[in-house]
Structure formats: C-alpha cells, structure tokens
Image 1 (tube, rainbow, N blue to C red):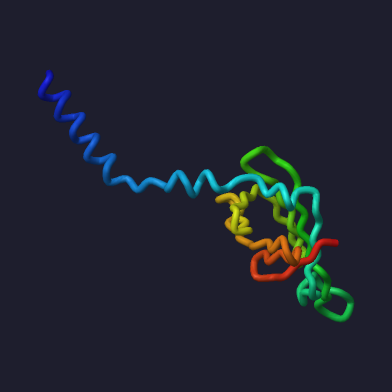
Image 2 (cartoon, rainbow, N blue to C red):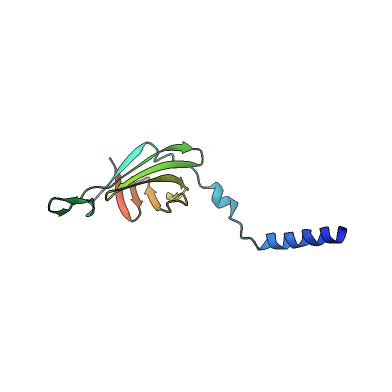
Length: 126
C-alpha cells in the first residue's frame, strides 16, 4: 500500500510540474477598469456599417460604455454596426483592456489623451 501511495504521489507531482502556470504577478496587476467606469465613448470617425437606410448602408458613430462590476473587473456594453455586445473587462497598469473569454476583445486606453482604441477603432469620451 505504501509503495502504491508513494508511486501515485510521485506521478501526480510529475504531472503537476508539466502544467503551465499563469504568472501570478501578471494576474495581480489586472483589475477593474475604474478610470473608465461610468464613462461613455463614441468612435472618433463615423463607421461605414450601421445598417441599411433607404438608399443603402448608413454610416454612424459606434459607442462603448463601461460600468462598475466588482474589484477585479468592470462591465462593458459596445454598440457597433447594428450589433450590441456586453461582457466583463479587466485593465492593467499599461492601459491594456482585456474582455472576458466569452467575447475576446482587447483595447488600450491612453489616460493622457483620453483616447480609447477598442477592436482597432479609435474612440473619445462623449
């Protein structure tokens, strides 16, 4: 019994050494996007695809809003084209914004210029 138990423990430890672990310092640097919470942004330039009008495609400004969720994440609501997407985001000290695994979007906020780049489109606070 001792030999089996010891062998099982060694096999388990051997497997655990091979599992990639996320760097805990990187995880601890991410949290809620408090500087963006309760702020609405509008795309700086009109985007070409916002649905169809009587004469064809209509251009408009896309919008994204951030709101509080908890200490480790914020909520976002993004309206682009004729689509709306929402989910959770985290921010780090470099201004990088990452959405939850369900939506997989990424952006960057420059607190000096207040410009938000979200899914390769530039936004400004409105």
